[in-house]
Image (cartoon, rainbow, N blue to C red):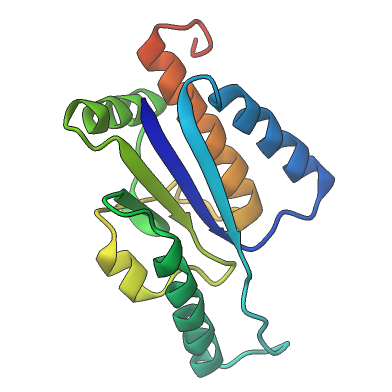
Length: 160
């Protein structure tokens, strides 16, 4: 059974995101060990300088590092990462399981992204889309795609 962790910088506050994420979290429970770590986003000034942003990302990265499970295959979500079709993402999940990478940790940064040390530490960089989405919506989309990938691998009719 896959062990899937999500490390997310920032907490869901909007009910529509909370509700949607909770639905996929509930759906995933029978198929994998699924855990989420919501980390505090560093507060920055109204108009932060690049130095402010870099310092904030570095502090968030230190917190992220503490929560990455030992031995996990780390996937950092960022715009420059690899894009998958749903079917290819299902194959990725299956390949991880087949190769003994039963613990996968996905990392979603704050609205300013991820510090380069997390990207460099990751085993893979992944992008949900070339489009820009709120990082809270990206969390819901990722949970849905993990569920879809597992359903594809199970032979379910969920993916039509």
